[in-house]
Image (cartoon, rainbow, N blue to C red; front, side):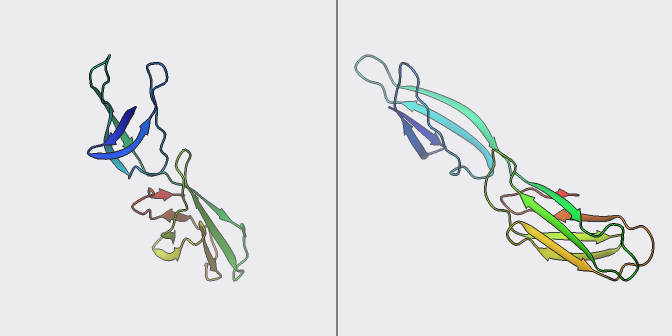
Length: 145
């Protein structure tokens, strides 16, 4: 048996098959840099062995913004939607806030069920460069569209 550790914490145990052992985890590593150890305790024929590697776990994020009413007439209600999701192989449901901006104007919206929406009918006549920024969390990166 080979014990896989993140520092002093045991992640799991892999059985030897031939001269190899493996262990798969998808959720137990936090967003950070980790030193992973594979420790073989030895037996009657082989001595104890230790192998280390470094793993950087990053925060996955992807988001897209969609403008449902484009172009619009003055006074017409416009709906903006920002969808936030994890980038594979990352997983999870992002939460937090999305900030919509039009020049100096700003609207903050909660990302509920991976969606943030803004409904607005107060845009002046002209072109507007509206951006949507997912503000990130401790588990997901910031993303701008």
